[in-house]
Image (cartoon, rainbow, N blue to C red; front, top):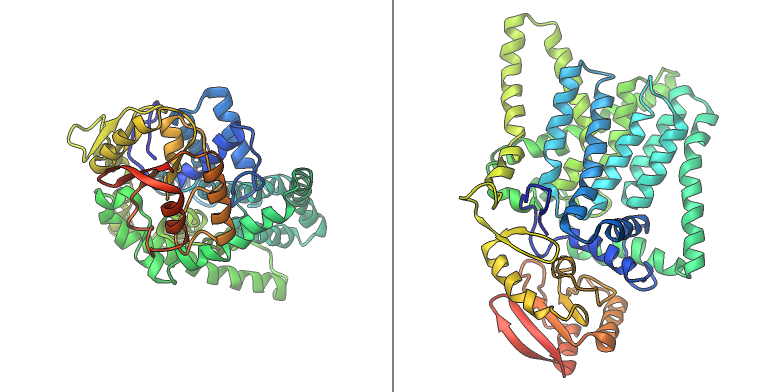
Length: 483
């Protein structure tokens, strides 16, 4: 799914990306369905309800989707600048926040929870780093982080450790822990009322540590060393900076910071030393790094987990150059400045890939029910073929990995699951999907996804052959009608 409306229509994904998952959640809730009971949700429910509320108030256009995603980017970048300003001069603090924040739009197309979770952990850190120490407010941010994405639990745990070590007072720890505990009780109450306690744990923890790990995870360090999942940006000028520096700042630096965090924690516990602001940042950064290993250790996930480590890298650079002469300082910083400028390459890349601002873009614009989008030419053709097929507005399913098409075509989701893939979709979830298809889906539009849809034949192929027949076929698109 890609940008549209008030957003500058920068291409940020394809028809087969994660972000359509969250919009599908919102559309499901908008249609009166409940998470876990009526459709599959791999996180806690607030994000689904947030999108549903926004869609109800402002419509289901892509601009609403984009503004919702812009919010955690702004929150995280502003909070990061505020944190950096406590350890660095203003110019340095702004530079760190700008470098990290410039890459966030490059990864749109990832599920929105990947942005909200780290953003709220950064907000949590803003209330833990002296002199702005407020464990209660940190606990509120931590609770929100867990509710939007449980994968950041290691980052929240690191925050609890910082809350205690900063003043060595149990009251501070309990004050911060109150937020996550209250959020947990509210979530449990919701699950009990909706009768979805077991479904929640099955769809969140069961899936994340089960089929997802088997299907969608490359062993470390091949990913993120190979920087997979970089979406459209691998084809733009940003790629030249991405490979030499993305790994260094997004993975190596946080690992070095993790070693520093362990040393500082040992000093505080064994020698009764005072926890410094830098050490507090290092501990939370280490928790965020651990969060990146919960599921898929992709390049974007690593970068989203690295903001606090970037601050500490900048602190170290400034200390190294502070005692040098003016000539030595400028000569030493010159390569850093060049790398920094190159690191802002997503900004001009956004223009280069825009199909409305740049006439020479490799993408083309397509008008949809949710607003204009920029797509690769082959996918633009596919979308244009799909749009007339969905004119009825219901009784249609987009498979195997195209949940974003529900929003783009203005149709109501028809299946409880949004991915139907061999080795990925569990037998129980697949049976649930097949039952829903038989109940109220007369047409299946199957969009080819050769990167993920591998391992045929499998159970779903037999289901299609028995209950549906091929009605139409286009390059990359097969239409099945119910027999």
